[in-house]
Image 1: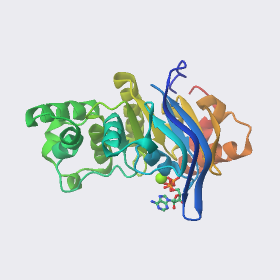
Image 2: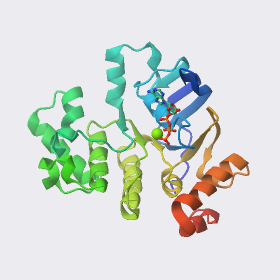
Image 3: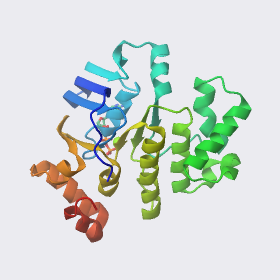
Image 4: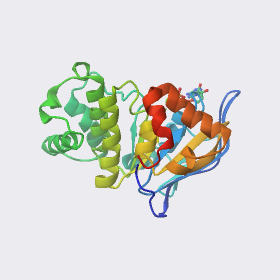
Length: 269
Ligand SMILES: Nc1ncnc2c1ncn2[C@@H]1O[C@H](COP(=O)(O)OP(=O)(O)OP(=O)(O)O)[C@@H](O)[C@H]1O
Ligand SMILES: [Mg+2]
């Protein structure tokens, strides 16, 4: 388990956020803070608004009311240039780890460098190699097409792509879904390594409770349009609140099976 971090300045802040799609009210008066350098994991049932939360943080969606601030900038007031400046600081690893299928690994990893920097081809390739090494992938994969990679490899290339322009914040949407246990462990290790070595702030959305437990400094549970429960891993795992217990331990049993369920009472394992 990642150790709780000392208090640090707020990097991402939601204040009184409302968001609806037609009659479907996703958030009412939602508050959340993410501290610089921490890994905060968002858990919650399907359709509760976890992905929408990440999309608000990178300005892919806008709040109907309330404030979303990233690095001190209020996203609702930003024009296209301002949003591009924020996206330079915040990387988003999509649900499903989507890569551009028509581009090879090098061009996938190089995409943000071309978009946001003036780096030339040689510098982009050098950086792409470094990023592949960071995610423990052989650099001879640079010329491969996504269709020829395994699911775990695609997720790691997606991670390499997200770190290419040295973001301050990485948003991960379900980074381990669909992977085998070995690759789930690997992705969790990567998230922790990137936090340690690049000092990034991470927001992880996951249904995978063992990964949440392993990588998080804090966990926030989305429930009925808000974050009523935010705390350290131990606070969430020991919570007596029925909704939290049901979710954390119920999901653990369903997803992890009996072996994973056995870990729920052993804290600090
Ligand atoms: N672009 C959109 N247009 C309309 N409705 C949307 C849009 N994006 C999300 N929603 C709705 O907002 C709600 C929250 O969606 P979101 O994708 O954030 O859920 P989630 O918690 O990520 O679920 P899952 O665990 O299944 O990925 C859902 O009811 C969804 O249908
Ligand atoms: Mg989602």
